[in-house]
Structure formats: structure tokens, C-alpha cells
Length: 461
Image (cartoon, rainbow, N blue to C red; front, side, top):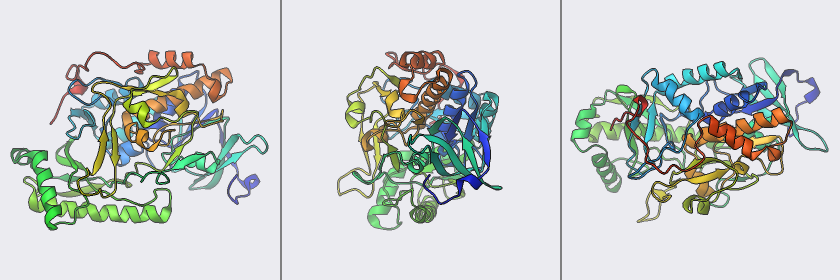
């Protein structure tokens, strides 16, 4: 234990077979997948009052389901498809092209998604603890294995005991507290920038499109930066329609050189993100056709943090693995997304976002070993704290992949519980057959995706 809490005085709130820390897209899928392996007691811990993490706090589009390029292929399935199907059943999604090369995105209503996550988790039998913040990790003395966590709720501190844990906290908070090694973003390469997303209403989308749409927006942003008329932090950014008439969502703010694991710096990032958002609002109102009568109606619940701690696993995914389309015997998911590195202010002539592409239509394997904390049999990691280098992380952090990671890690933890095995001793063949039976994609498809073939694949430009 790393704190000064008197552990013997803290009451035990619950005991479980598997505890998942962080109810983002990875954590929700991990918890549900674990439950499906014979019904272990699964507790999902979340510090906010709703599940979803970035999927409901920051963004409104799932990326990673499809490879980019002229012949998109669908590379994510299984539990992530269930989420999209549930959204589609109430008419709350559409597909949209991505002009920056990340591939077709699945746009959704993030407010509806909160309830979808609620319903899916309840149906699976996961015990969800909202407004519950991880405070510390307790390990066995000589053995050093994680055996319980300390959390804080409105009623005070409490302990949750388990034999198996999945860290889907995004920032690897559980591994940090349990003193499991990781690489800190910024130690070797600059950490990716943070973004406060914002939404605007009363946008005349027809006028925006008639005036040149995204192409014209990019030209106007570049002019504003070059002429110094608006203090925009970047010359490019995403503005796209939402699942609400006359509303748009953005990915434009850029906050650099601040540490998302330091409270003071994170607070500074939040303030700077809000400041930049309203500069963009003024620019859009003044300069961009269709935006004159619009205004901001919402900022992201928290600033979007792309990269902080990356846990050292039994294997680390690398840039060469991504661009070289690596194959692994223990493949647990696949990814065709490009390396998309959101950088601090670039040097003259450099792109604001560094892109490097997987060969058109191809997808690389992500091995199960990247989801297992190194030398540990009781801890899995999934989501953006999984085991990868900076460049590989910049490719494999899309929510399509984080959901697939969660399903793989949760399935493995459930199988480990069922067979009384450790994370490193899970049968890979059984894991893969279980994932495949659920619809997970473990082999790169050879045929292009049939975009437009069913209801949830309709397109809105």
C-alpha cells in the first residue's frame, strides 16, 4: 500500500472475483465480457456519475471500426457491435467519412450512449459503483500481488477485495498505485496534446456546405492564424454534424506540454481548453458561413487526454508492428488505423498532426500479451494505458480498438477465474475461439466492408 491510510480501520465494501477500474469504453466491455465467462462476480468502479469515459464525456464518434482508404474493411466486431446496434435501435447513429484519413467514423449521440451503457451493464449483471474514486492499491507483503483496492465514496473510504483486476482507468491509475512499471508520456517523445471538444447549435449546415464546407473552413483557419486575426492554436480541425439537427461537434482545441496525471497541470489544461473553445466560437461566428447565429451549447465534461501512462506488458506494440502489418500467434484484436500523433506546435513546414499509414486496407495484429502487465498474473490493462510505444499507441487508441481490448481482457480474466489460472497462463486457443464466437474480428478481412448494407451504416457527409 502506498498511502498513509490505516487499512485495518477501513471497512470492506465488497468482495468480487474480478474488479475493473474505470468505466470507459474499454472498462464497460471488459466487465461485461468477464461476466459472460461463467458468471464471476464483477465490480466496475467509476469516479463519475455515468459510464462511458471518453465515449460519453468528450467525443461523439467511434473510430477504428473500419480501415481508412478507398476500400474500407471492417476490423472490429463482437461486443463493440452490440453497443452500436443498441444505439441504432433508437436511431441515434450514422456513418460519416473522415477527411483526415482515420477512416469512416460511427457518429452517435453521447447522451443516449450513457443510457445504452447503463442498460448493457445492467443486463450483463455487472455491479457498477458510480461516484467511486480509486484511492490506493493494497498488495500482499512478500508475494506482492494485488489483493484489494481502496476507494472513496460519499460515505467515506472503503475496500474492495478480489483476486483479479483490470486497469481500464486510461491513466493506469491502478498500476501506478500498485507500483507496476510503466512509461510516462513525454519521457522519450513529446506527449500527445489534449483537446477540449465543444458543440454548437443553430448552425446552417446547408450554407456551410454550399460555401465549401471543411475545405473552406481549413482555408479560413489558416488565414486567421497567418494574419493573426484570431489566436487559434492550430490551422486545422474537425467540425462535423451531430445526431441533433443544426448542431456540430469539434476537435479543434490543442493544449500542449501539460501532464494529465498532475492535478495542477490538468487544471491548467482544463482552463486553457475552455479559453481556446470560446476563441474558436468567435472565429466561427465571424468568419465561417453558416455559423453567424450559432453558439457553444456544451464543452466536453473533461478535457480529452490522449496519452499519459503506458504500462509495460508482456509485450509492447511498436511502430514497426503497426506499419509492417505484424502477425502474432496470440492475436486478441486487429487494427488498421494510421499512426495519428497530435503534436505540439510543429516546426515550419511540418504538419500539425503527424500521420503514418498502415498499407491500404490492411490491419495488424494486437497480441494478448500487450494486455497483461509484465510479470503479473492478476492484472490486465486495456484502453489507452495498454502496453505500446508512443507511435503504436497513436495508432491503436481509437475507441473501436479500446472496446476490443476490453472485451479481450475481460474474456481472459473470466477464463482465468473459471480455470483458476493466471493472466499469463490463459489458454490462447480458448481465448481466441471464445472471442471469435462472439463476433470479434481476429483476422484481417480480404473483402471491402459493405458500408450501406444495413441500417446503422447509413452515411451523412
